[in-house]
Length: 426
Image (cartoon, rainbow, N blue to C red; front, top):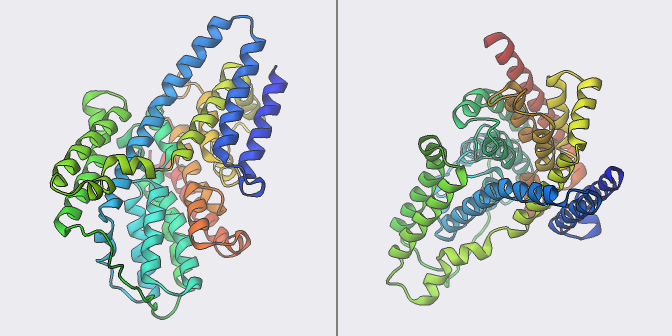
């Protein structure tokens, strides 16, 4: 049974990593892998009732992550539908390439913790497209946006799905992860930013744009209201969890409901067609549902490995062969640039018990940093990178030559500082 489950999991992993080559969405591969792994386990075990209870418990825990993502993605889509992010882009008038790169990178770094690294990447690359005509310049900006978005997402409980998983799982707390990872994440961004900015000279040339006469008219007051309400709601989720001790997805769903009511009241006098385009129902249609199904599939696959004892055995092997927690966490981070960081973190959560590694332990904090920022080493190593690759047609080898070296430099700089911070500064 163990060997068969491992073979199925490995085959599913290869299919996920080869998504673009085999032209099969990774969500489909993940769902099949998860169901088949559990099917093998259910058919092989003698205690069907226990297996059924284990599956039910696993889905109960995973539903928190899925509903959290669903609510967050819907809120962001609703802000975007009201052109709320346009208020941010309209404020940028800088023409110097180096200064603009610093501005864009810092906006990305501080926007990513409030939204998430994937959404922030999409927003910021859309911004850069409106500001810069040269594709060569845009490639450098896009590479830096990937690094900044991943670094910014690592120090926030809602900025990266892996940090969210650790937060929801109880391995880290919102306040502590922000305090411990802010400076390492900042170093991870600033060092590559300094090097890349030296490669850019002169001023940008803005593209010629033609305004769509049929574009939906939304008042500036409405844009501001939806943007401010949406960001405040996202920021209030960690506070809601702290005050009520309820799961984070409850705060996110409450926030979605409040923003839903606000937008319905604002557009109450519009005709039905315009109201539909600005509604939560429309936002739900536009969110990246395959990504949510991918998380479901890969996480139930990991749970199958967990209940069969495979992850526990793997933890023992890593402790025997590597031993050092620093090297284990950094290995996970670098591995996340090759394979998806979601299953890596899920696997680690199953490998190490909280009785031995309690909430806010060094391992969990370092893992949040390494798996959150390590994906920047390759363009396919993170959701932000994949999104940017598709939007700007970034070549894999171009990224390896131009961005990977500085991304790794930033990754190791932040990691070394985090270890120094923990061991020396306490």
